[in-house]
Image (cartoon, rainbow, N blue to C red; front, side, top):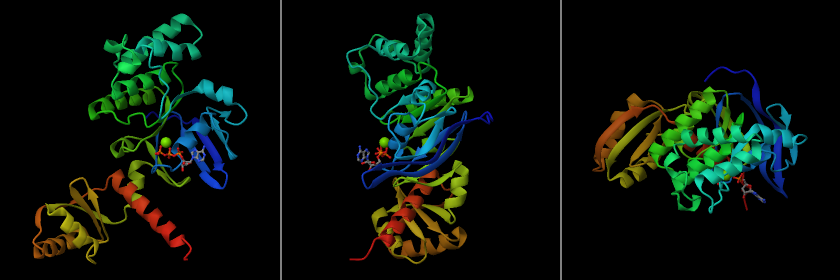
Length: 322
Ligand SMILES: Nc1ncnc2c1ncn2[C@@H]1O[C@H](COP(=O)(O)OP(=O)(O)OP(=O)(O)O)[C@@H](O)[C@H]1O
Ligand SMILES: [Mg+2]
């Protein structure tokens, strides 16, 4: 990432309440120009609500925010000129072709006809939609529709782009292509605020904010998060039968925690070297066949799971007894 110093997105105690329910609680963020900021959190955590407030589409209950130096409460029209927004259910016109959809969104923002046409061509090329330009949006597959939605939200070359789960339902190869495109934008100085449930995408962000029940509970680089939140060492176990191993380990004092990770188990321990022979012995004793037991570096998914468990435990402990 080029080191820009200008702040693109800033919030101070940004809050949204629906009646007694707080969807976003005192959010403080500061995101530099050119940054790819990943906003992670479980379903219902407050990600889309935050984005809608930052785009000037939803009035905050309290707090402040600025986008490209413009205040979201007082200058929503200026804010809209700065941004591109791809919502979770981006509004494509199903009965218009790819080209016509782009023309519609282009003309909303670009007054000059020639500039508009050349921007549309650039957008088509960027997301590689050339061969579908005359296809109706309704006829595109889900992944191609997502690409068109992305092209529509960036056709006017905004400085700051909000992408709410832009790659949901897209195949891994296309996702990689889209990320190459996002990197290109970021290198050119565009700021990207992106939500995703794909952990390997989170790893690609410059910084990650983790929101939990409306509260920002962690915010750092992917490496910083791993250092801060994975204080123990991690083992990867491949074995059969895996369910039996999980149950056995879950109730074992030899480990700190165990979680499924695809068809493997991730086990957190205080000392990997000490734990490995002990675990091998325990598993063998129960007739579990170990195909692989090795120490691994934690991923952002491990951080996510660890944070989610920590927060779940906290809220259970705070629950009043009846
Ligand atoms: N208009 C509304 N009235 C009441 N509650 C709302 C309203 N809009 C959103 N909420 C609630 O606010 C919370 C945050 O919703 P939000 O859409 O921001 O979550 P999210 O983090 O984007 O989740 P997801 O990952 O599922 O997209 C949810 O509990 C949701 O039900
Ligand atoms: Mg959402």
